[in-house]
Length: 87
Image (cartoon, rainbow, N blue to C red; front, side):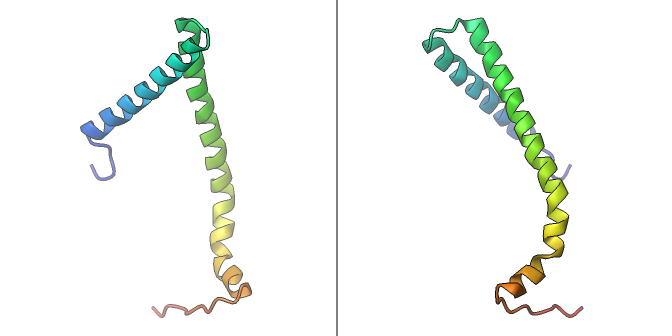
């Protein structure tokens, strides 16, 4: 399947997520938090990052079509020489 993650790539992403959670848990444990609270905080922080990602994806989805449509006009306004493709 084109564009799909191969099994080894999928496992690499899972390992990366696990390593990040372990690192956050270890950091929070060192700060005095017990293991269960540290794990809960690490998982909650990763879910918060999903929300941030979704917010920026929504902003891109909203603004990208307008920006793409006006890119040549903006380039001309800044003095760029635009050569139109013949097709």
